[in-house]
Image (tube, rainbow, N blue to C red; front, side, top):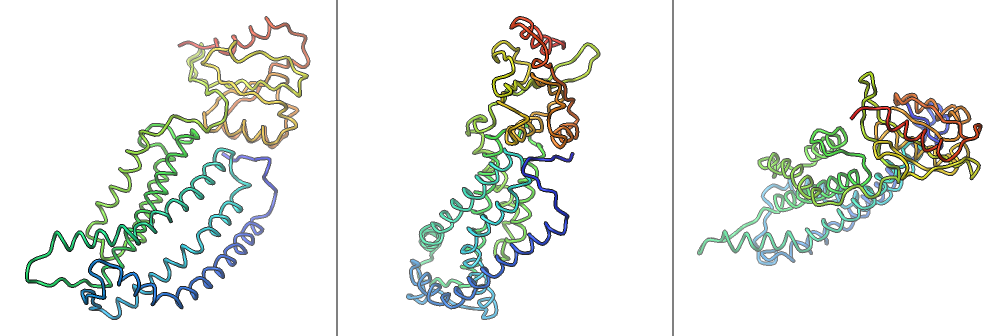
Length: 369
């Protein structure tokens, strides 16, 4: 399926690669500058955090048993802080690069997931490092302490566990927001193996496999299961689709020959020149979308194409014409989705309200329940 949107610009593949390289180079430069800054600041930050622990370095309970591991952990923290610093710019560049090639609902989904996921993920990660992790360490020392035996903590393991949990929190938040927005925008159905749902979970599990530190390898599978289960449980309490377009979804019906159809009627007002009928006059089995002028409004065409793709429309019927005045790119995109384009031609025919309502009822009734 190859779709042509109004924002699409015919450019050679080399131009896209050059744009990606330019944006990637800018991000790499900013990441290097952030890495140098945190390399300069990392020692006092680590010392301050260790000293703030309930059983911190001030009490002599934190030791470094593996100097090489400590150097690796130190650079991991520098990389994590540099990545956090660069994330807002990464999100902006990602949205700018992908904006032209997405359907309206996909564009809205990506913006909400990127902005909401990055923002909420960073807030929870900050809460984890400043309050949550010190509280967990203090509780573990209180519960697991043995009278007469001192407690020693390995600084390398402390930071490895903290980094691993930070990644897990971030990926869980991204998964939850991604699935929630997909549900609200009707990009995902309730089937457990919906392709969109599988792609989201697969991507997050792969990232968790890449970022999980060695200190958490023993519980990687348990955290992976939770990474899938927790978002799936929470989205069950999310509201029904609210952010999708105002188009009414068609229902699957069978024609007299047993063929399955999902018909969508586009009530194009042609800037007031085309006769119209209210949506209440059509059966709920017939999908319905309204627009002022499909020929003149590229955003309306993109929204209609988005509706066709999301609702798997098999037949698109336009009110004012037969579809031939529409841009060739739009008609080719509709055809690529295996959707048949036709029209009633109300602009060219003298019709009464009764004949128009009869035509609409015919579209909805050429089926068998």
